[in-house]
Structures are given as C-alpha cells and as structure tokens.
Amino acid sequence: MIEQKKIVMTVLVFKTNIRFKKDVAKVATCLQRDKGINRWNVDLEDIDKVLRVETNSLTAKGIINSIRRCGYECDELPG
Image (cartoon, rainbow, N blue to C red; front, side):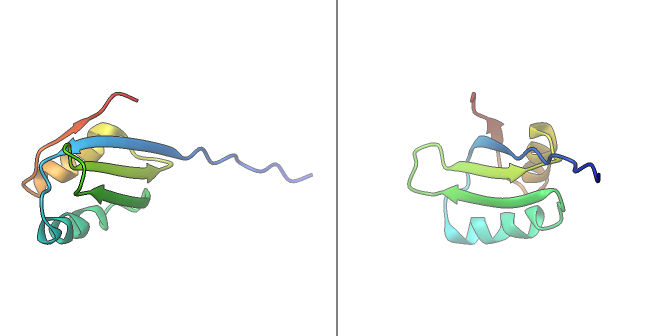
C-alpha cells in the first residue's frame, strides 16, 4: 500500500495598503516568486484592502516580508 501525504491548505488573510490595479500588478510580480503560493487575491473594494493567500508551505511572516519588500504595508488579520 502506498502511503499518501496529506496536503493541508491554509488561507492567510492580511490587511494591506494596496489601493489600485497597478499596485496589484506590482504585488503580483513579488508573489509569483513564491512557489508555495497556490492562489491569491486582493479585495480592492474592502476598506482593509484584504489580501488572501492560499498556501501549503508559507508562513504569514514570509508573505508579510514579501509584500513589504514590494513597498506595501501588510499585517495579518486575526482568523
């Protein structure tokens, strides 16, 4: 019998200062470097400009560092 590894998907949620589509495009180049990100999106309509990231290997701290290196603020929202 072959033992299969269970992949646990985590959704991390952040408050950001990403305001415009051009900002999303800039952030996209940063996030595409992280191979552990399966899917992500930014809700520009939300007052907190919420970034949601689906990952099975990255930490909130790692994502925060990536976003900050791109020049934007990013803080994890309580789950």
